[in-house]
Length: 338
Ligand SMILES: NC(=O)C[C@H](N)C(=O)O
Image (cartoon, rainbow, N blue to C red; front, top):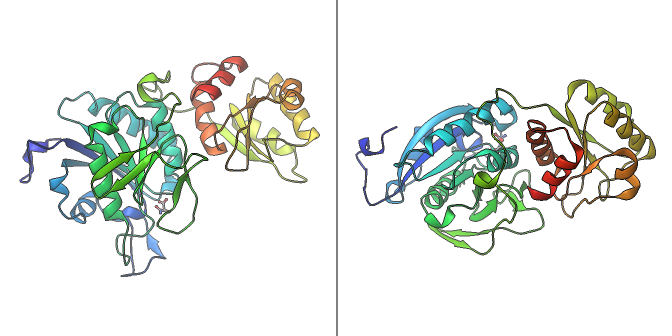
């Protein structure tokens, strides 16, 4: 990767690596329509070419990591992406990163990277809700502002962040909150970290949870992540689903009702899983609030409360925790720290 090779190279600007993974931002379909398109169809150069005057914000060099709908992103992609960032971040001529990604699992990728990236350099994830061929495609502005933030020293040391529809969100707390509107992201309970106006960043808050260089996870020797599955509780939910998931998984996350609760038969079943050394983390199917230790459920069945993670993020933390320990106390401590 050579930034100086570009005819637009400007030595007074910072150098940003763009890692393209696919999604609607690289989607192509019928001209002007926002529906019925193919995500992950356009190459990275088309994305860069769609942003006017990007060369005035930063020197960009692109890597096509994959070109997929984000439903097809796997933990193998995550390990590849993280290893690439960790290697490139060691280069003095690399100042920041932007990852273009489908929005459907963008919240998961951003939390995973937030826990395993070993750099203070800015890492920004973005995408779009409308394909590149749609009327008022939102990808070019999202990409422009993401590159601007990745080139901004103020974004250093803040963990992985998401830029979307002029908002800046933490990789830990960002959530997709709408299935189709361009303003599709928000932060669990906490609003956003700040705003982008054109290429300027305005920060108002920051995440206090451990991330990146302060996080204890090391993926450098990992070829795969321990499988963790999510069980969704509802009225009349059959606890047999937990037995089934236990055959596939090293750990289970339950999306419980209310503050993360479930029925007596589920509590008994969770107690049995403890005897099989399969940790169970309790979350809520509600997207705001906290799930804390509950003497009625946790003491009888040895489950671990998730604190404030949604189930799909809790399963990432449990999986990374399982690369280091199966101890309940240690895992419970991680759910308070990360
Ligand atoms: N807006 C999007 O990017 C949705 C697309 N299905 C994806 O996640 O790849």
